[in-house]
Amino acid sequence: MTPPLLPDALNDPVRVGVVGLGYWGPNLIRNLNDLEASELRWICDLDQKRLDTFGRRYPTVRATQEFEDLLADPELDAVAIATPVSTHHPLALAALDAGKHVFLEKPLAASVAEAQELAEVAEDRGLVLMPGHTFLYSPPVNMIRDLIRSGELGDIYFISMSRVNLGLHQSDVSVAWDLGPHDFSILRYWLEDTPSYVSALSRSCVFPTIPDVAFINLEYDGGAIAHVELSWLAPSKLRRTTIVGSSKMIVYDDVSNEPVRIFDSGVMLGAPQSFGEFHLSYRTGDIVSPAMRPAEPLRLEMADFCNAVRTGETPRSSAQLGVEVVRMIEAVDSSLVSAGSRVQVVEEGALAA
Ligand SMILES: NC(=O)c1ccc[n+]([C@@H]2O[C@H](COP(=O)([O-])OP(=O)(O)OC[C@H]3O[C@@H](n4cnc5c(N)ncnc54)[C@H](O)[C@@H]3O)[C@@H](O)[C@H]2O)c1
Image (cartoon, rainbow, N blue to C red; front, top):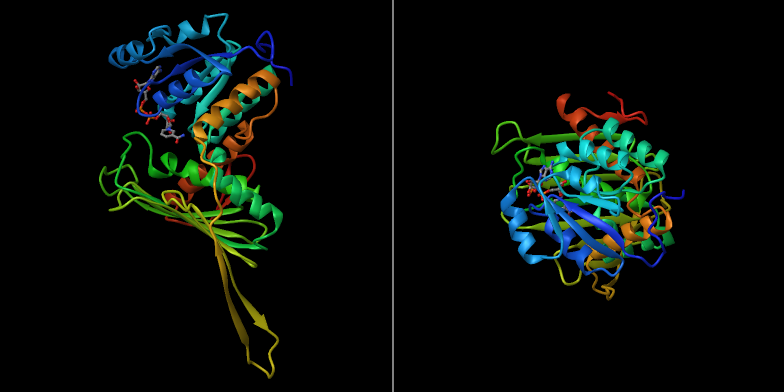
């Protein structure tokens, strides 16, 4: 794939405009402004007050309420979009149509059909479309992926994930669409697969129509199962994942200063010595907490986006991974409308009960 808007030389910075200066967009601005590989050219928001605030902070960057101003700038290589989910598809499609590479915050779009269309348009035009799955750049997540791939954990029996805290309640999407992309992208990255079956239970505790707690079960063809608990209603912040393999187990706690602990623990089933008799031997060995080099995942993510634009290489957070994440969330919604039934996740985005 050769992007038509490859910057003049590989070493030229990628000229980017950031759209959406709400809660998350300022983090994109800070990193794109800091990186040598990028040049922040535009900031854009419908809200003039947000523009004024960030215009003062970045006085050399052009500010506009009109997204079209970015698309009309022939020197702009790419846009980074951090607006509400319902706007992702129209904004990204317009940017791709204008020949701009697109970084698009998670989730890629509000449906599989929309996400797939964006991925196809980007592919056809030889442009980068990268979803913002920040955890794919987190050092603990990558350490665990390496451990899984090396076989050190053995067969993955199950994974249990909790992502709960008090807030931030969203007014336009459920907790599965807001927090789910984090865990679903991590699972996809670790297991390199999309689950075959999903079932989910949720409740709208605060707003009557917006689920703010969800318990989600995922089943993979290889035998692994996963449970994901998501909530904006919890007394304390938990970002805790347990991975149980046939050889070793891991506890990944993203809010701890020892984020990855590897337990050399397990259980062996010995041969029965008489009919119906089982011998279990439990192993509780060393617990290792590997040193982790600190790195801001978002900075690595932005650097990967710039690299993809410059070289045409597929970013780690690929459009295809983004489509699969949306497929998982759609499966959750499908289960929820059928009272938590177990739904099959099928390729075309259609779901069979
Ligand atoms: N990667 C992460 O860890 C992470 C964390 C938080 C949010 N996000 C994602 O970032 C995106 C934005 O979330 P947020 O919490 O910052 O939302 P937000 O509501 O705080 O901010 C959205 C901003 O977009 C602006 N906006 C809306 N439509 C626009 C348009 N057409 N043109 C220009 N500006 C427009 C709004 O005025 C607002 O300032 C979402 O996709 C969310 O899922 C990602």
